[in-house]
Amino acid sequence: MSEPTAHAGQVVPEVDENQLIAERREKLKALREQQASGGEVAFPNDFKPQDRAQHLHEAYAELSKEVLEEKPVSASVAGRMMLKRVMGKASFFTLQDASFGPSQGRIQVYINNDSVGEEAHAAFKHWDLGDIVAAEGKLFKTRTGELTIHADRVRRPDLLALR
Image 1 (cartoon, rainbow, N blue to C red):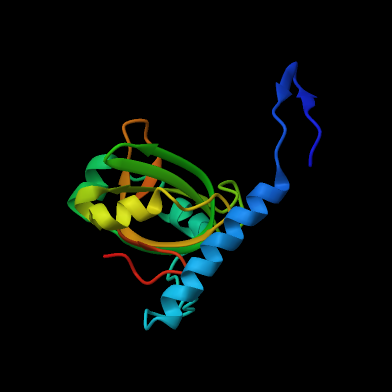
Image 2: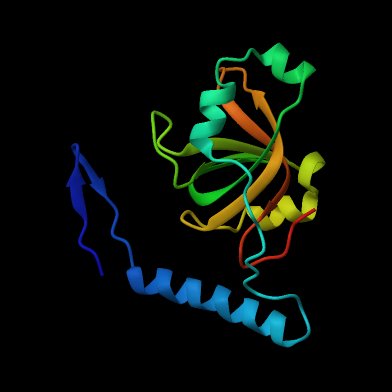
């Protein structure tokens, strides 16, 4: 068990690492049971990303919101989920791949019930930071001007494609 630590004047709450490990093992057990009962492969490895975050930033970050709307650009990426923001019927997450450069291999991904379906979005809400995630969709710019993938398909290597 970790001790609470002071960080920049704030006390960081104690984390029960044993509980986190137990939760992860329960998720793994459920996936294996699903596969054993005739479900799909628990850990498929057939996704081949076509893009890297850094390349997308280099090629499209300077394009305006309007240009990206007029001429949609498809993107297909995979990496670790580093940040997750769930807001009801829509969510954003930051994915980090193996590319380098000013973007540090990170790109934001947007999903909502309309683009990936309610079932897939509900499943996404239970995914953990650090999970490997794949996303496919079209590039767009947010209101704040951040290059983002509006995903119409997301998946984890331990789940089948979601929509």
